[in-house]
Image (cartoon, rainbow, N blue to C red; front, top):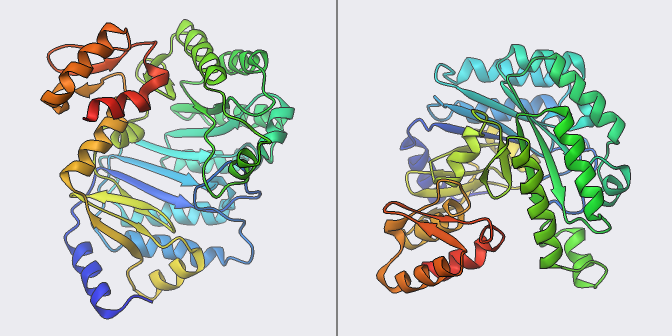
Length: 381
């Protein structure tokens, strides 16, 4: 438990929070723990789902909320039963001023989206669904430890289309152990046929505290930057040819269908996180809720603060994050962030064809995009 001084500090922090434009709600439950995922998640076990929903709603009451975007992530938000999901969404509408909401995203798993759940989500304001497909071949899904099949994914896609959500995203992943370039090409072609408005295509990362990371360290899996680049370039070729805009390193959208919520993260806007393990950045402060679902529930329902690791972000921290995030976007990094010491490096990278710049922004070229991380480090000075 937090001591009295810490609770007082967090209470003062909460009292100073003003309405933010972007709200994130974390649902940590998964039927199966994917071996590559490092987010706070776990199987439901004996969790009292009524109490869990109560805790989320109680946390929403602690500060004024008038968001423009809402994002339910996880974990697997659609693991909640129809009853619990409906109670959560109706309860949120009673506690959150929804007048300005222009985008409400729900992450979904093909295994647990029914026609009734999709219709209910649409009725209660969800405008965008992000479906975690990852791959369109069962062998790759097996490697990833996913709990759905390609057939289930196709059925779920039909259910979501029938529910007439204004926008649908498909989540994909590439450079997976055992995945060939031809297999990835087929996955992209299959995805294009289904006609999503938005596609997220992530290069597999080996995150610490995951089974995949351990297998990388033992030599069972290996990193291959050339292989990654081949997958990445094929993705750009196929999706841009189909009319998608490559507006962030891992994200592609048809005109008018960018993810407003995710763009807010990349552009450094404030956001408030609700739920166990959720992060928040508001007014130059960052914190996260306790990464322990039973403890989060008990503390929230008892009226205690659940925020931990509260920190004031320094100017250097904010600058570093801007380099790491904004350089990934089509808009690019503001030129004013490049100091005099790094101007020579900027010109060198331009001569190498890795970036371009004008009087306002630095933007990566097609050749530079796969090297975004080392380029960001080089330009920070």
